[in-house]
Amino acid sequence: MWRWGKARPALALGLAVAAAPALALAGSRAADALAKLEHGRWQVRSASQAAVQHSVCLGDPALLFQVEHGPRGCSQQLLRTGERNATVEYVCRGRGFGHTTVRMETSTTATIDTQGFVDGHPFSYRATARKLSDC
Image (cartoon, rainbow, N blue to C red; front, side, top):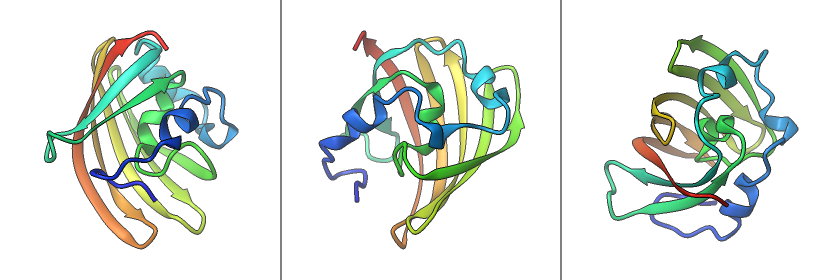
């Protein structure tokens, strides 16, 4: 399983799936809060591990809620939404769970606060996501 600091070649391909049914949110309110984020190639960098960064092709902004678990096999529940942010809890059967807040700073920058467990290991960090280019 991918962790900050370990490469996961399939991550970019997996996150490129823009319409993954597993990412369907309760209504579309969380996605609406992030709807102004531009699609394209984004760099996600952990604030606590600044040297570690990953590039993802972002078609669906809801993918930013599950950076640690990837786009498949998780159910999400919207907890809070605002004009520029949303908080989601999600469960990935047999793989763990997470609690994530994504705040849209601009159409090309977002802040991600996430914590949870993946494959029995805890994670908790803040990351910055920035659009680099088109995919």
